[in-house]
Image 1 (tube, one colour):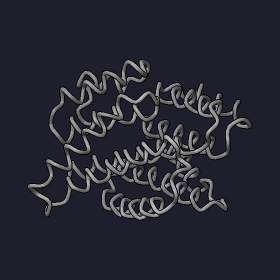
Image 2: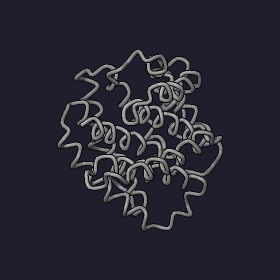
Image 3: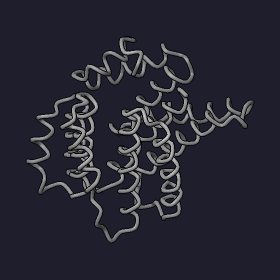
Amino acid sequence: MIYRQTFIRIIAAVLFLFAIQQVGSANEKDSTAQNIFTLIYNQHFSEAEKALALHCSQLEPFYYNILNLDLYWWKYSLSRSKDDAKSLNSMLSNFNKNSANKQEVSINELIRLSYQMRYEIKRYNLVGALFLRSEARSKIETVKQYELSFLGDRQNLFDLYVSLFDYFDTAINPFLFGRKSEAYSKSLLKLEKYSFNNDLILSTLAHYFLGRIYMKVEKQPEKGMGHFKILAKRFPENPLFYELANGLNPRF
């Protein structure tokens, strides 16, 4: 059960970060998106909301939508209030449905599925989340059929996501007992490599998932805490990362 819950939470979180990295190529837009991303992950929600409003016309609509959605997700995740849940579900229902680009449509659906999975986990609806996970796998296979050269360096993030997906598929597959260690080692080595990447979002993602895997799956909490210590230093005003870095939130 712990494998499945951790698996669903992880693939859901990474879908957003894959999406935010694959859209847009201009440095200015990437910089603006990363600045807002940093505000969100430092839990400066009011400032992030103001920055989104200020740069709405400068950001591509897709950038704006996914950052706004992530902001609403974190507000709900920490408050669990009915009002925040309602706002989040409203955004999910209306998330950027209209697009003539098949690649963008597929990515949009991955984003929607990711947040819907996370929401179902928060409501302890594990069965529903597992069904959504199957849909996500189908969408991933669809995206893999596209020519991914348009992603450029962002192909690393897609590669990271697929590695995570395969890792946890192996972890919950009872018929692969005895062959798990090879899959684990390969995935973990790839994650460790990406944790040293200069890209803020990619390295943040790798550290986060390594922390989760070592603490929840590999049962090596000290290694996991080490990765969260890096995140706590990177996002010093995020109390969650501080707690995880110091072993103060064992239920997370």
